[in-house]
Image (spheres, helix red, strand yellow):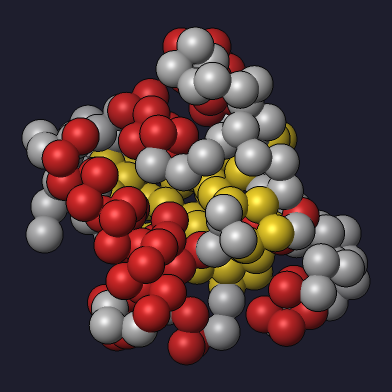
Length: 177
């Protein structure tokens, strides 16, 4: 099989990480930061300040013979709100923006096609940023596998579990436990 990598963000990386970990064909999901220009290796605290320009993102490795980038991006776009500028729900700030960081011209073309296909699915204009990949910085260890380690925490129950329920029902053929 042929592995491919895409970096995406849609609010808190804990949510997108938990979703992508349950998509058939995804082999690795890493929480981190990207998209900013501040010097040095960013920390969670610095990114949360909104001053680094980085977004909370996940770097997703997937087998493109098992799941296409188009299908992966469709799942991503329909399981967060790509119409909310600089935030998701109560998580507000540029660090929570909806973003797709592509690795190649083919990925860019696929992201653009998904964007066009889904624009009428939503009641408001899509604001998802589609940009070339910038350096990816791995988040601190306590942010990795967050939902699986903390699924009874309030945030996980209130915010992540409904997204997983939607994934399970809307994409039953793509869901793995």
